[in-house]
Image 1: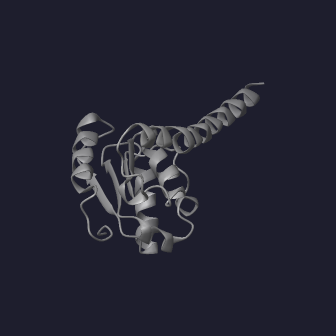
Image 2: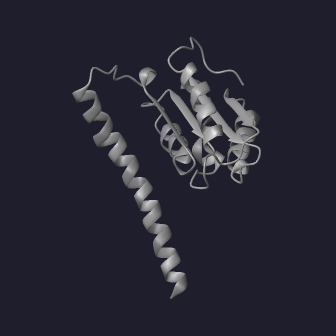
Length: 161
């Protein structure tokens, strides 16, 4: 019976992520574009997050390169898809204006981002990779959000490795 509960909760979690992705793409973004004077083109759309929310911009953003050109992930959690599943076609990443990954060297989740960084480097995908001296904490996220935000909508070409 305990096995069933774990299995069911895992399915609910996966289902929740899928529902969030649909809501973001089909409801939230169109509602924002309708209510505010946005530039509703992929080159002017960014997504970022931290911790559990750090996996979401990778899962959603890399899966919808027709919608997002700027992606940031800070201390991405294990809900992040495997690197080859996130970006099965490395050439498609050339559409990105910025892919920013960061994690603290004392963060227990470092391996998640580090594995993606290695895969991106092996595939020749330009990205920014920042490892700081922090753990899974606010100082790391605040610093990296600052550095990510300073690069948004400014780069004329794709990101540097």
